[in-house]
Image (cartoon, rainbow, N blue to C red):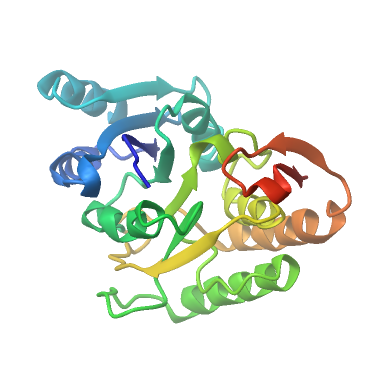
Length: 261
């Protein structure tokens, strides 16, 4: 499949120290098929110098297509992603955290199932393949695997990493998907809703993971895990029979309409 542009959505909150590093990596990666990059940064009302760092980088690198958005109040990662998704103009979009836990050099691994015409959605899994992974917290990994297992029960998918940051979507699909969760509930919500689109083609590929400790700035905590369980049940079970029609022109002709919550 021919893709002309990939939108890279970067939600940022208090990432002044590292935002330039991840932008350097995004700038340097050469995408397969001569795909161009659109970088969309959404500053979720950071209390540090994140905005200054972004604007300075934007000024110093006019050759990069960077679109900057700012929330006037802190709303959460999910809300920042909602803003970025609405602004995306590429045929596909990918989510990129502003820290250094995920490596943009692996965009091409995630893009390959799409470019080869197999996928509409691709998840990058930290728990499959032979890529390097930083060894961190046992209970955190168990929590991630439990949330993925619980999500799979309701979606009937066989994902290994529902909570991964690296999610690639066909833009026309995700822009028509009504999303409500403003914080870390985004992951189970979007997974539940995407899974219910008839004939959707979801793939998963192995990626590396360079995790941060809480001292290094990791923000997710146990309360977010509790919220994720609530969202899995809410969007996977309680809302199953409420539907909203969206058009998905890429879906095979036998099912040109998709119905999701």
